[in-house]
Image (cartoon, rainbow, N blue to C red; front, side, top):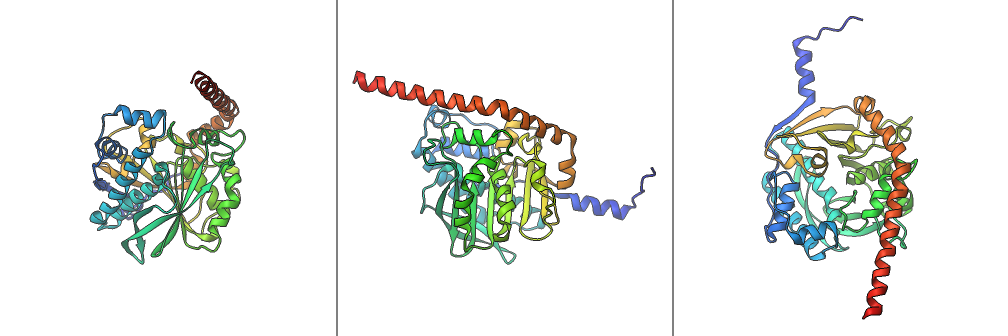
Length: 370
């Protein structure tokens, strides 16, 4: 079959459509009130290529929740969001990077475990201009049963001068609330990533969305998958869905569905990330897929955890959902996930049950000795 020869104008148009931005990332700094937290957050936001993990932070990540440290992380996020006002975009490419950076921060807020009533000043776009709006945590939405000691939650945020925001937590750190539940949600046999907690929390999500319009939904990793499940069932109330390194859903969820109208869907997929390389994405005129590249190669763990949009040099290219869904490696990883879930789910559950039994034995022995 003969190939069509493209003229110079067609090549230029294709490049202009694909190429979005290459240059500096968003250099918003935090408070440095807690040096260890500041260094960790700056590393996660791509502003540094390494940091020293203190024993206090290591314990808070791996072993025991530290609410004081989480409060410092929230303050760091507040300072960074406020600093974004000093880095407002001046071009279309810069605006895409800025929007992705701010959206990713919103998707990370659930990992700081704020309480209802806490406030965040967040940059929002209204009628073509960016402004700061004060958002309050309106509701912690449970996505697991009350009796489960490792709950998954989503956060509903509201503002007087901004659209409602729904932000889902993803697979959290070992000491974080909901760690085991998020792992189980990643590998529920026969179900797409996040489908089980979404089904449990669907009515609660519907109740929070009731009477609202123009809602913006955010999530990263598992949280991105939860956002995509929300898109499937509540698109009428949504204005925008932004997901970062999301696990795609199993292909049959999107059969017969095309988002040519309705909410805008932005899928950000960082180079070398493995999680976003499985499952299928929604398609349609309202769906945009962006590939984000760092200034230096990263392994798949760092590619999944860090924000390339905050790095010293970042490049963003436009991809296509149909192309991504058709990639051979994506289809293979999707099949591997489907099979592996039947093996990993019982192992994760068994490990969790054994840890609960062990903790109770230790507590009983300690109480008797005392």
